Length: 321
Image 1 (cartoon, helix red, strand yellow):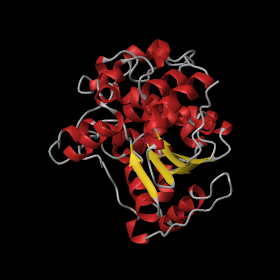
Image 2 (cartoon, rainbow, N blue to C red; image 1 turned 135 degrees about the vertical axis):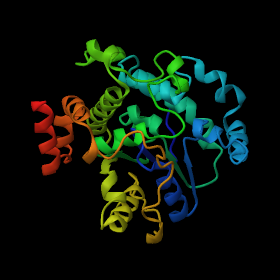
Image 3 (cartoon, rainbow, N blue to C red; image 1 turned 180 degrees about the vertical axis):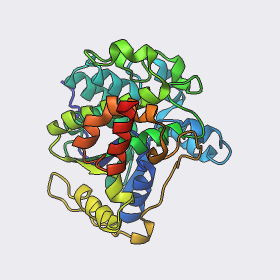
Image 4 (spheres, rainbow, N blue to C red; image 1 turned 30 degrees about the vertical axis):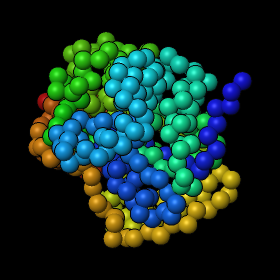
């Protein structure tokens, strides 16, 4: 049987999106010697297409790295891309061995060509493969980033280019390209999905991704969960980022990679939401408070968010309305 292990020292950064993973990939590139650090190496982002001329060199490099077919038509095939594998895993449509084999196939040739000692990948498409990563990359470290669901939902709705679960999203037209309660076995919101607003669907996505990550990360001894707020919205963010780098650079084989962290790089954001479709939660109308609380309220508290007295007052008013 063909071995499906990639021995290179690797670092993986993932989340449900909207958590500054691009910044973290840039931070690792600047902080680590002999490191190849990328964000979503085999994906053409829609927001990058709007600035095609500016990003032309990136597009060309991805064609060189993965080939025209894999970057275009190959993504339409079932399990032909990381997103499809992670969604299939989250839906229970592929087992551990099958997912590991697909992950190996998608990354082996690319990583094997690299001369750098350490490979870093920031990729939200890995969110459903937290338990699969150590099967393929035994000498890897992984971090999953969680963010306050209220701010996460707002950030998604305020993306300037496209909004998920709407016709402006290219994946809207591809079956099963986006997670939904309708395609997840035994999901409690399955029967209500068709009547959900876009806001409610994004709320559901936050809940599903967090719950799945918490469950699956238990099978990865070399992975941890970190809060977005501790890295980017805390007085101690420099210390938090330094501690994260220290964790990610101590590999399972006990090798400690050297890193030099420049605190001036902290707090920098990439792909910031620029639209203003949804205000901060403090100004949400009561119907949105009620909808968010119904879908995400209990999990929000479990993750250490939502303890503000104002939030609880808003919930009580929403319940009385």
